[in-house]
Image 1 (cartoon, helix red, strand yellow):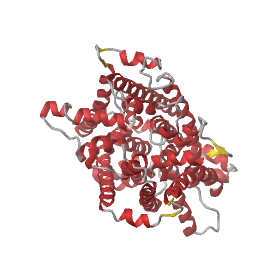
Image 2 (tube, helix red, strand yellow; image 1 turned 90 degrees about the vertical axis):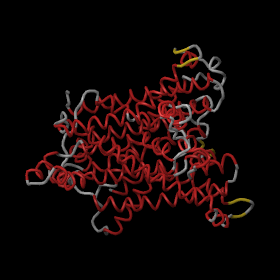
Image 3 (cartoon, one colour; image 1 turned 180 degrees about the horizontal axis):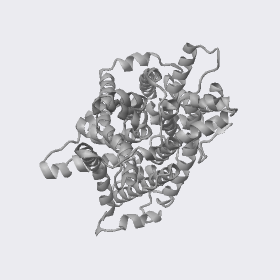
Image 4 (spheres, one colour; image 1 turned 30 degrees about the vertical axis):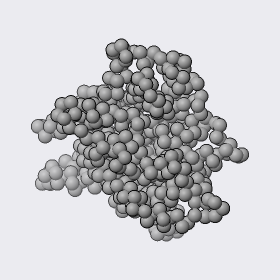
Length: 552
């Protein structure tokens, strides 16, 4: 049964990830009539490359630690506390995740750079420093921890922790011994996703770090697009790939050792109004962090979208409806990019849910009798690592790989609109898996066995036992996949057709052209992207609470 569930995800990743990445890497190493294996030692022995590799690892680890420190309290607040505007705020904190990195980098530059808010108030500038990069990474990845960890936290039975308190444990000891071990796989999974995203960071590092700082992703782009040095870019891609694969192997082994069955309950019955000074202080602290790190940069974007040449108004929004009035940057009206993005994101979300759902199910079913534990463990760990590889692979590599491999029958998709959602789904699948996996693994196998004993088929047992428990996680996964698809830029910029641009591609094109009109339109499109994302996520929030019977 496990192999049957794995067939579709393996085929999808092999065809649309493994094949393009292998092809573009092989083309880079096979130059001038032969294989350039000697370049591997030359590149990896270059002190400048070693410095880039060290900074890539260091800033990713620091960003992950800072994000967990600031976002885990937020995960608790959204999972356990009930307060006015909770659903709206939970949707808003996910908005940064869909913003093109160049836009968010520009917003942080306005806050932290020359003439920014900190410079005007206290004469402090943080641009071209590591702190600006770290804060921008928290801005992007805060929602990953809140929604991934909070999704499971909201379904943990609080009575287990209360029982520990009755037996004499302090509040902190009960949390450390009961709740934290249960949340371990979700926390590790969220940390992994944050690390992978910051490990491959491009736009934020390039804009906020300046020429002093560069990640492997920045260097791969520079070697590929600017210097046209494909052999060096191929070596850097392989280095990035090897580092990510090693990390994923360790992660898969660690999570398998920590997984256990948990008592899950309806999330609508676990949240309550803040009790006592401590919970109120925590709520205020979390809201303050959200206001400073998330709402303030978003407010800067909105303010700039309305700040026209003649004062505040809708001047930048009005010209978006016409290709001619917008400055001739596009052959279609820029506002058409909104409809394109929604269509692409809907298709990509459907693909990600099918592929990711099957993959998560395959990682949780028991192997057939007679299958040794060592063989099963290796299979599961390898498959789990494979699913996360797109998050740690250069989007530049994937985009170029699509162009050179998917242009001949029977995979002649280069001119097809379907190529864009395929690329977006590659990034959405890991979020579906990481969101659903902790919940699926927490389901007690005895419930499935009881359903089987009573005569239920495997499909009916899944429908009657697993589905009611994972419905909440499924909707969270759908929201993540949709948000990621809306904001995907790295690969889409290479494969999106000129007459069918997405919102992030349109924003980047405007920012790449000089002039106040182009900049204002970029801010206006970014604001539209924010509103659309927030509205979609809020709709999912309401659908989720309605299905769970929460009437508050």
